[in-house]
Image (cartoon, one colour):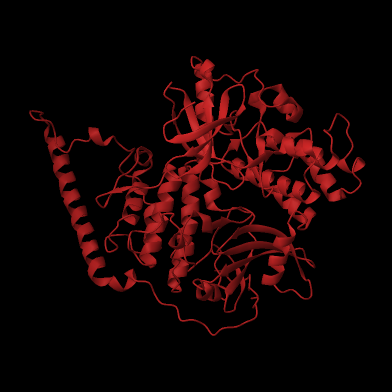
Amino acid sequence: MELEGFSQLEKIAEGGMAVLYRGIQSSLGRPVAIKVMKGALQGTPEAHEMFEWESRIVARLDHPHIIRVIDRGLTSDEMPYFVMDYVEGLTLKDALKNKKLSDRRKLRIIMQVAKALGYAHKNNVIHRDIKPGNILLDREGNARVVDFGIARLSEDTEVSTIKEEGMTVGTPAYMAPEQKRGASFTSSASDIYSLGIIMYLMLANKLPKAGYPPPSHFNPKIPSSLDKITMACLAEDPDRRPSADKLVALLLKALKGAHLNQEQKVEAQETFKDPKEKFRLLDVIRETRFGSVCLYENRQDHSLMVLKKRIGNFNGYNESEILSRIKHRNIINVRGVSRNDRLFITILEYLPGGSLQSRMANPMPVDEFTVVADQICDAMAFAHSNRIVHGNLRPHNILFDDTNTVKVMDFGFEPHYVETEEENWYKAPGESPSAQSDVFAAGVIFYQLLTGSLPEWKRGLLQPCAAFSEIPQNLRTVIKAMLCLETHVRVQSFEEVKHALHLKDVAGPPKDKTKIQTAPRKGRKHGPLRTLALAAALVLLLGVNGALYFWIYVKKSGDSAGATALQIQPPSEEPEFRFQKVDRSKPN
């Protein structure tokens, strides 16, 4: 097997549809896994479509516990292939067979797979074949879900030629009851049932059968809380099973940090001194060399809070301190801040709805987009009115609570892009943090939400993708104005952005640019009413253009002060945490 751009190809697995190779990507010198469709299926359109479908689905997903597709193409024999991250390790199936997993590692795997499914389901992707053989474990014991070959979108599948009526997909031992009736009956709840089978297997060391007792019947060490969660996932009625997000919440409460390794617990204890043991560590949400994000539970009232640690960089401390004293419904509640010479810590409310990034695998419908965009504008307008610039607005730091209310966070935090080779797509080249740079970042996010892709520029001009032409004219106009590379031409405030989002689309449905005619064809005659109408339209057009240029002139000459970042005076340092009581009776 030879493939241009890759070397040292070695066959490592084979299935009914494809062969999996390990190789080295020549351009970057990194190991990759390459999935190539079998030549015997070359004349089978359905197989081609399913193979292409898998690569398209996984390429949309970006989650630490889902294998990532990084490239795709055709071999010299015209067979499709796609390239994935290579995970050095073994499958959960092999690990269970070898009995190499400790109880803690089993619990961590269950949690990670549940989080991966929560992310996939938010993006309407159903896996449909969750089983131990499709869960890879790296050398640290972290799980990656693989093989989305029979996955589909829960709302609208593009695999139109594959008839699912009367067809079953999945692995019988792990299939939900409704899945056995036919592929068309599967839903996100079917994935939860499959995970419930895996949970039962890992906890009781055997597969469940009809009339099976809870896992603790076979393993007395299993707490009753885990028994209940496992059996809830295995409910016959799909509506009685928890969603993936609910499952994660139930597991966090039940495990009380039992899935974390000792290093994680020690690191958390060193960061957050809690001599009275008032708080219990439930989860380490994220760990990087820049810091960590941990979830804690108050032992007394069982409320949750997030502790965010930032090492060696104090950008964002001043903004966090101010936001601990002022509140807005669309800005995350900062409950306290603290710092020393090495790091600073922010204590935040816990938001179970995840980030905007976790909902962007597919373009967002206009109605849903408008609700999200409105709230982002409200949050940013409030921050700017209080002289707070974000400077790093992006989908990862726009979160949702359990009622789907938008909450913006990380005001003033230094972008990680500054310290890595990754490009910051949400910042205009050479531009410093300011109110106008926040408008630009929001424009990129809005463009992504509606089109599913990042904007591109050529010679300083936005080059809209095909999907951009399909959205309403008023949204295209305001997003283009937000994405102007010159700040004096760009929309100057989020109040203006929000107003423009709700302007009625008087231009009607978008038209193909190649078909637009700026003048009547030569020789074509019009009646007097038609001529009068054209003249009136011309006068109106000249008036609108004049008003627009006058507006730009006024903005350019009179609003220069508004185009620069407002400096925040550092507050006096306070070494201890300060928890603020919020008067809920007062409006934001």
